Amino acid sequence: MTAVATAAPHPTRQQTQQQQAWDIAATVCDPEIPVLTIADLGILRDVQVTEEQVKVTITPTYSGCPAMDAIRDDLKAAFAREGYKDTEVDLVLAPAWTTDWMTDAGKAKLQEYGIAPPSGMAAAGGHSGPIRLKMAVKCPQCSSLNTKELTRFGSTSCKALYVCKDCLEPFDYFKVL
Image (cartoon, rainbow, N blue to C red; front, side, top):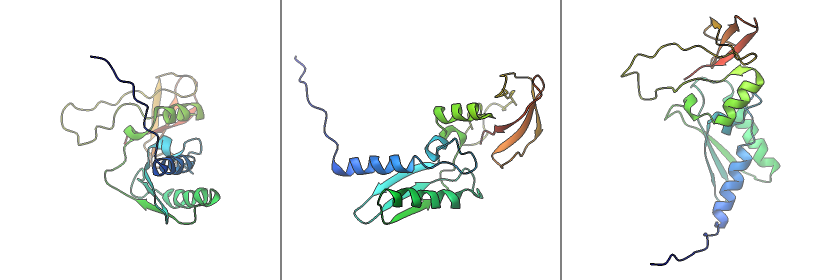
């Protein structure tokens, strides 16, 4: 039996447009954490291109997230700059966003920015099974695990405020949701 080499299929014009549109949407940054794009954050769910419009689907980090209006406006502006005349942005709440959707690159960007990235999995689907234990949060400044939560809610609802007991620096921790 011999293997037959076949050429990889060429992307269709529609696939190329879809990828280009995704790439445009993926440049939009989160207004609350400007080092993260909406793709890094995992809230960019889908981008569809038709002859008439671009349709972008995003999922908020939580249902009352105040950044969604700014993200919608930024998406429309990004597509307008690229010559797209009609951009629709749909917000979908289901399935609910979790920190599991964040990219590894996004978590690294948070760390570099001075925000401790979420640690662990969100355990989507409920809390059946083993009891979840509170784990130490690593300081993004000195990497110490000798940290303490000061308040469950930090500068945004997605973050908690911590302090490092070694370097004494306060820092945000992006909560596992």
